Image (cartoon, rainbow, N blue to C red; front, side, top):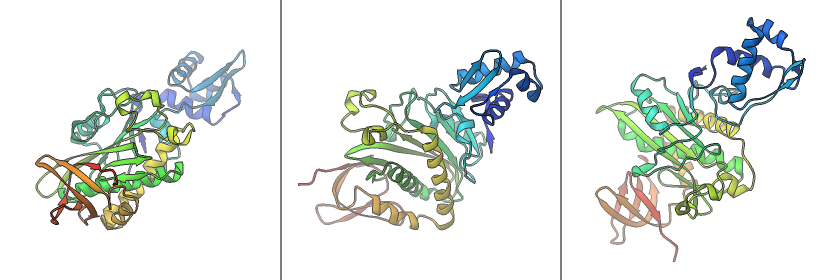
Length: 336
């Protein structure tokens, strides 16, 4: 794995972090650190301050040295990749304290040759993006906002399946971790208790018969409180902490999401959508319900019947006709 040091730590600070982490809880003298790193004690002091500025808890013991107490719960590259057990996703991590949109940077990096599995993660977004041109509210210090660059050897028609595979993967991790009945609203939203907790935005660059790259953008409301959401979203959005009453460690949760997505993406590339179709159906909040779907070409609705092998939503309209919808904005209608 490689870490994008330019966004978090220079190599000197990274070396000091590794050394101090190995001595967690113990006082290590400045002289000892200076010898181990081959730099002056002033350089050690500067690196300590660099780590503190990023949120690392390092105490100074007067005339004795420094004690490493703990790391920040911020998705810094070096924290995310610590003990990250993945083959592809997360081999490279690019962290930004603040960004307009992780998807915008991911698309740019993908066009410039970023390796498959590159992850862009931010602590906050100023122009977070959802589907259909909507914004994704992205306050700092509480949630997860990230994008993943993928380069599957598939035809462009497989893109809806990638979105559904991602939804299944995230839903599994979050449901198990939080012990919540999280469900998927076709095609890309995760809901719990009638409110949205996570969303997915998939963007693609392709030719006629092949995909150049796919960028999968993901937003998960982790620790945002009710008053951290705009008033117009408080009835429709929620977070893990609002649903469970507990505070969540973002970095640990993030690792779990990346590891599950890595496994599921590998399975998807090998076996296709079929194994995920049954999992999607099992976790769907859309099937068996009357719905309304807004599409670019107009609106349709009826009873949601099934998810096809292509990932389309099959609907029986009120006139009895059956239609397959590949994309659209779904509203699940109240049960009468």
